[in-house]
Image (tube, rainbow, N blue to C red; front, side, top):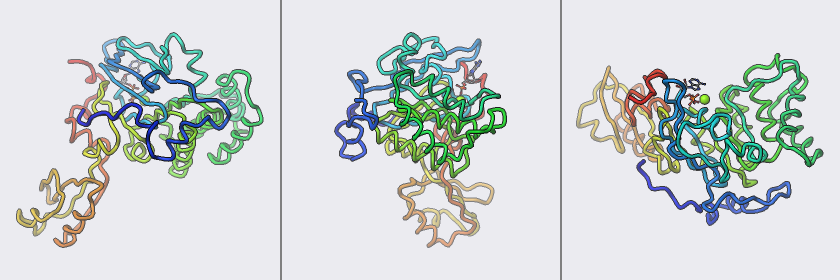
Length: 350
Ligand SMILES: Nc1ncnc2c1ncn2[C@@H]1O[C@H](COP(=O)(O)OP(=O)(O)O)[C@@H](O)[C@H]1O
Ligand SMILES: [Mg+2]
C-alpha cells in the first residue's frame, strides 16, 4: 500500500455539502444509528477462506467508513464475492476477523440484515412468480414490521419506471439483466444503512448504468454506506470515494482515487515511423515508453493529458490511439503477469 490512509472521521468534517447531508436524519425519519467508535461500517482483517485446496481469501483487509461509496475492485476469481458472502454471514471465514456495524455477521445475521440491502452477483428468482411478486416478497423479508406501505409503493413504482422493468413477467422469462433489475429495485425500494452490491451492473446496458449511478448518489446523499464490487475500473472511478483493489485473495491497494492515481494512467500508442530517441524525448509527461511492433506505446497520468497530447500534435504522430487503462492492463503493469494469467487454482498459497 503506497498512500497513507486518511483520518477515519474525514467525512464528518468534510466541507463537501453532500457529506453534510450524511449527518442529517435519513429522509424516512430514522436517525442514523451509531456505527462503532471509529466510524467503520465494515472492518475485515486478515480474512481467510479455503474451499478445499483453493485459498479464495488469503489475508484480505477491507475497511469501509460510514457514508462512503467504496469500490471493491478485482479481476474475476480475485475473491470479491467470497468476501461479500462472509460480510453477509452467508459464508464463514476460515480465519481473520470481520465486523459489520460492529457486529459479527455470522452470529448477528438477523439484526444486521435489517440494515443491509444486498444485490448478489448472480440473481436467481422464483420461476413461477412475477417480477413484481418477487420484489414484494423479498422486500417483506427484508423490512420486517412495522413499515410505511405507501412510501414503499411510491418508491417501487418510481424504480420500476426508471429501470424500465415490467413487473408482470414471470421470473423464468427474465434475462440476467432483468433479474438484476429485480434485485436492484428491491434493494433501493426500502431504505438501508448499508448497500452491498456484487457486480450489480454486469448485465445492464449503458443507459441503465446511468440510472444505477443516480440511485447510488441518492442513497449516499441520504447518508447510507455503499460497498460496490466491480471488475470495471471506469465504473468504480465514476462512483466511488475510496477503492480497495484485491488480487488473488489479498488486498493489493486501498485509498482514494487520487491516492491511486498512479494506477489510472491513460494508454497512448502511435506509429513509430519517423520517430527517433530525440523526437520521443520531446513528449511531455510520458511514462513506460517503449517501441514495439512498429508502435510507440506510453502512459500518462489521466489528469495531465493535455501537455502530452499537445507535444504529440507538434510531433505530427500518425495512427494515434488514446485509451484509459483497462483493469487487466493495470494489474499486469502494477502487480505482474501472474495476477491475470493465473487460473483460479494458482490463486492458492505456494
Ligand atoms: N463455493 C466454492 N467452492 C470452491 N471454490 C470456490 C467457491 N466459491 C469461490 N471459489 C473460488 O474462490 C476464488 C474466488 O472466487 P470469487 O470470490 O467468486 O471471486 P470474484 O467474485 O472476485 O470473481 C475463485 O478461485 C473461485 O473459483
Ligand atoms: Mg464475483
